[in-house]
Image 1 (tube, rainbow, N blue to C red):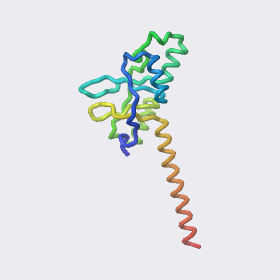
Image 2 (image 1 turned 120 degrees about the horizontal axis):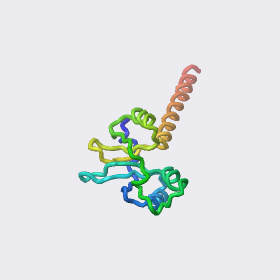
Image 3 (image 1 turned 90 degrees about the vertical axis):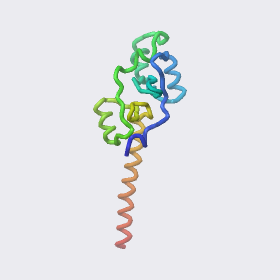
Image 4 (image 1 turned 90 degrees about the horizontal axis):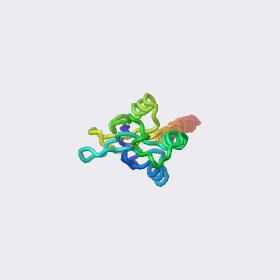
Amino acid sequence: MPIGEICNREVVIAEKTLPVIEAARLMRTHHVGDLVVVEQREGRRHPVGIVTDRDIVVEVVAAGVNPDTLKVGDIMGSEVATVRESEGLFEALRYMRDKGVRRMPVVDPAGGLVGILTLDDLLGLLAEEMMELAKLVSNERQREASARA
């Protein structure tokens, strides 16, 4: 199944110049733990980073830095791992594991942002798939038992 079919297409975004305080407010307002940092190129939003609630806690709050002096670009990771919307589920999971990330922007062939893939969303999806497999086994047993009765 291509990631483009299962990713969340409602992505909360920010630019590098957004104050960290505003980033935290956006996360709270939208009930998300991350913002995808984007730049406009050729009429498309291209992901250039991610800032997470953990980044704000570790880099700002715990470090005792005045959040009024920081922008999102100051605390976001320097490298963003993305996955193409045409990639399969297991390839995306492997890539997330290899990169050690819980969230990855999903991009089109030109690198434009189309969605986000999160570990939480994948866990929900995989749990549903496992439930369907369990039902299959149970139904097969019931069918066999009634056929032999």
